[in-house]
Image (tube, rainbow, N blue to C red; front, side, top):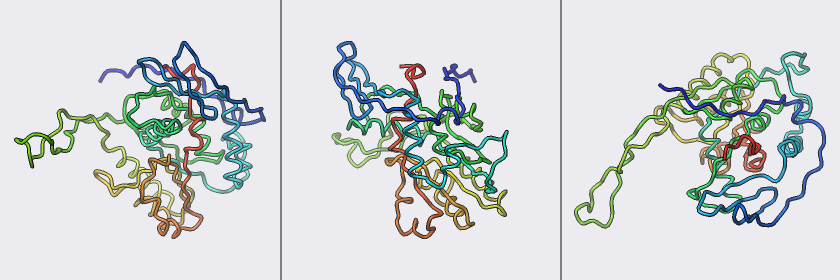
Length: 313
């Protein structure tokens, strides 16, 4: 297998430095840019409609100011985590809390696809609208997942090739498992408009490369974590809204339910469009009281835009 192309990655800044201090928000600017086509501004996001090219979405705020907005939002949403948000845990110094570390598992594709879709929804673009894919700011994402708490497991599973975000995850201490996509013949479809094919199922033109076993690996790793910590319930943080049954497994929700039955707390982090119906069922969620929580990521979509110098577009 040939080497994956090298990915340009920004220097990782300690979370304690990036998310501290107070900075004045910058007002949005409106107008047009004759060199980049028409411009649409919504909040602090700007959409460039480039002539005969893909659309491009950028933020009007510098990365450091976006991080301050994230910090203030988290302080309001998670008041119980104020101490760790303001002074994140670091292995080099004592930690006041006696609580065990949290366990984080990330379904990379589910999060990245949700990010791209959420960006497009800001400007009411369809999912099929050609758009540059900006790099994902994993540094900010990890801060939302961890919120300064002590961590025992930090795991990301996805598919090759690697990306700037995945390299950044590794720099922040996440173990990564990247699998090769496999070719699969797409499900047969009925081709309308042809008398000869009436009532027949015809295969699609060509096989499609898709992920395989990503969900199963995440499910296995979560199950092993549950077994290894049977006497020490903690908090599971699952960054994926996928609640459907997997190709070779019962799906994430069945594993989440096992954690909850064992007395754990569970946080499911997901973009709204990627959150499965299994997690939306009111009766199911209410069974676990305040030990189960869904955190929608759409409100942080702007903060996940990596700075332009690493966007590569």
